[in-house]
Length: 474
Image (cartoon, rainbow, N blue to C red; front, side, top):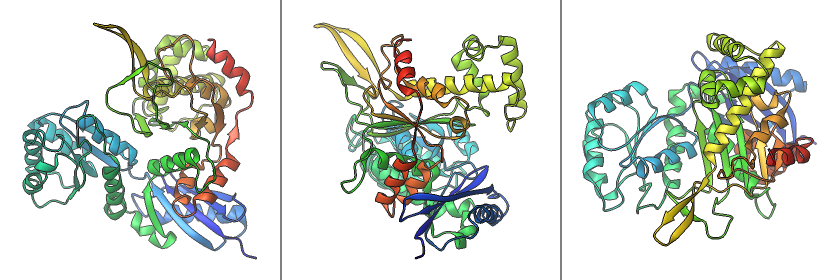
């Protein structure tokens, strides 16, 4: 009997990656990849990846589904504009990141001419315009809409601000394409980012896929569902929540250190785990993605060293600071450089450990003591992730690491930093087969198969218990 199979495609900036899945047995049939050729003829890369897959399988099965995601040609480049940086601008930023966008600029308050010129220079694929609660401030969002309306910016706009200013904003934005959706913050400190996320994804599918040239490969797949980061986030959510009575892993954290950024995803309410702690600030989304653009293993290697400290990197790599500086300069001159010598491998490990530690600390919340007229109060900013049940590592920097445990343990709580709300006692799992994006795609059509596939292939990290105890007492 013929195998029911799915082909899951990721059009990346460097490689087009394929996973062929046996839907009946919930297993990987094979993988293939080819150099991405989005800027020339995308089918060249797609055909190379298919040929690689066919070589590994012997022959290609008939696929029931052929689903794709993409981060090619720079990913989904977005700019967000809001009113107050900590409120509507932050809400717009979260909507963009949650939709899988590459956020290239965030602006707040009244846009100046210089701001508008910088936005035009950033060349976004989509601009999200927010500002004001419903019935609140209209003047600033109308000013910003008018300023953008006079600009040379030609990308689609999404209006997700004060509903009372929507009609006038649509008018002053002129003839350009504008999609109106619900306010990302309809009331003070109330988030409503899911409608904007949905519109961003739909604009990506309807328009950006064509602009990036991915449509030229349409005979090789059924549809592009979403940006690759959104597919990963959907896969993470499926793993946490399960489906149709099939349990997932529960609250979890995912770390993905890469060449340009280090991404962190969490699925958890993030509410205080200790009685008496009071949450402060903008409410946190249960499904959250953060992207640390200064923590890339290659494109931002000097920034990683600066953020972690040269002495700390040198100590971890067991190298002199001067030698670290020399090796970092060599990486900056050749971003495709892979570590070969023992010193290069040691530095690479130190860099990824530092990037993970910093990125997770930024993603997780913190607690602090605030002194009030009635006495001291403990307040929480951000998400409390101390009790998440699993931390999953994915991406090449982890998969190809000689010590993935040493990298992943940097996401854990340590007694020397008691104010950071990082995970304390999670299972440590490795997505060695790069399946999270594939499960996110497959979950759109057969969630049970996607969940079982992911659970079957996540690899427990050996020795996690003893290492975790050492980390907690460090």
